[in-house]
Each structure stands twice: as C-alpha cells, then as structure tokens.
Length: 136
Image (cartoon, rainbow, N blue to C red; front, side, top):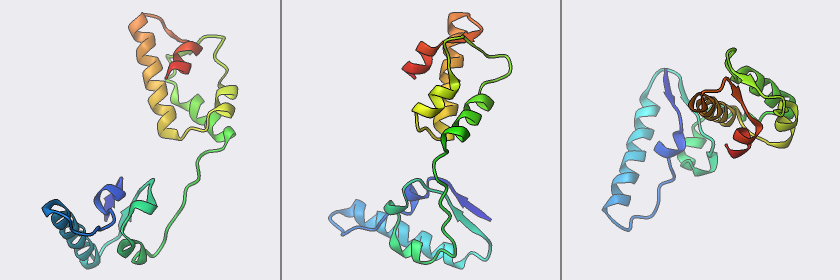
C-alpha cells in the first residue's frame, strides 16, 4: 500500500513550460503518474485541495471520498477528547460555545489544545484560560 498525505503538493497540476523549473516539475508529476499506474497494490492520496491536483490523477481514481468538516456536536467531542486528563479548564472556558462558534477541523483543535496546554505549563498553572484559547 502507498499512502500520500498532502498529495496536492506532490501531484499538482502540470503547467506550461516557462523555465527549467516548470519542465522538471512537470516531468516529476508525469513520472509519479507512471509509477502509481504500475503499482499493483492500493494507493491512497489524501488532500485538502482536490482542485490543485492534476486532472490525469483524478481520472484514474476508483473512488473519491469527501470528508466534510465536523459539525458543532462533533467539534465539541473533539475539544473534550483533545485535552489531556491532567489539564484543567478555568470556569470561563465554555467548550460547547466554542465548538458552536468556531468551525474548526480536528487538526486545528489539536493544534490549539497543544498551544494552550504549553501556555499553561509556561505560566506554571494547571489550568487553561479562555483568554489563551481566544488568542490561539
């Protein structure tokens, strides 16, 4: 099995050749296309930017699966599960309101939680504050 994350960066649209960089970038995309076609196993490409991928790749896909952004109730669950058990939230942190207001993906939530936990550790406090969450 081959798995390519951020596939749009590797399998970007080929462009008109204006300089040597374009020529070699187009050759790399063509080479990858040939190699994937000859691969006997499963190939999975993940991307947030399907429109940036070369059409020749998209035509060869057997399936394209779209994962929509999480809904508010899913985001709330992400927020709750992202904080480590040792982390405490101050009373001014209203996770249901945050989940409802901000349409974030799971990776965004994890990045924010890591940031606010590091800020709490830096302050020497066991709790995360709403102000720190808002700044993230």
